[in-house]
Amino acid sequence: MSRTSRRAIHEDNARNKDFIAMTMPLLAMGVFLYGPRVLLLALVGVITAKLSDRFAALLRGRSYDPTENLSVVVALVIVLMVPATVRYRVVVMAVLAAVLVAKEAFGGPGNYPFNPAAVGYCVAAVSFSEEMFMYPQPLDWFGIADWSFGGLAELFSLQNATMMH
Image (tube, rainbow, N blue to C red; front, side, top):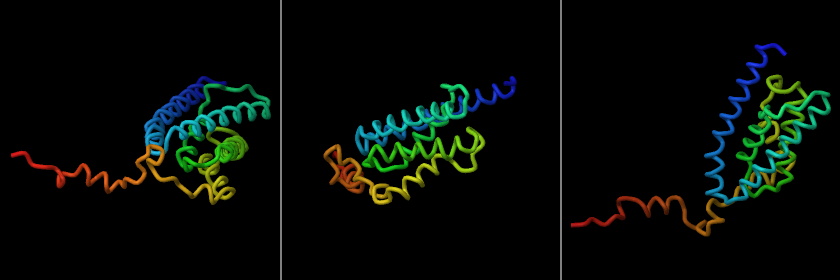
């Protein structure tokens, strides 16, 4: 491997770490709105992505590169797009389709014609359409789902504040 290609791979891995860091606040908001199940979905997606990378490396007869983390980004993006109530097997299937079909079948990172996360989401949406388009009520796990966001805005608005004389 040439020095230039090693540098490009290192830059891609650093960029992917930035993408992973950017998903953390979104996951935190998902946990706030929909509960800790979002973290479990993310964990299932990431484990599936890493196992898929290992399997693809085995099929291609090359060594597994644990620093290549594009599949982790793909898994996290898929988890952020699906409803929090989706079954774990839907996330597993979407990540498998994204990593093995959309990414590895075309030659790996940088060689795929379609975004792997979009392919994984589309496969899940076609296969499990009822489940994929039924989003839960936000804050339902918190016990305050009947509070509307408009109600929260009214609660904290200046119109309802009492003036102190």
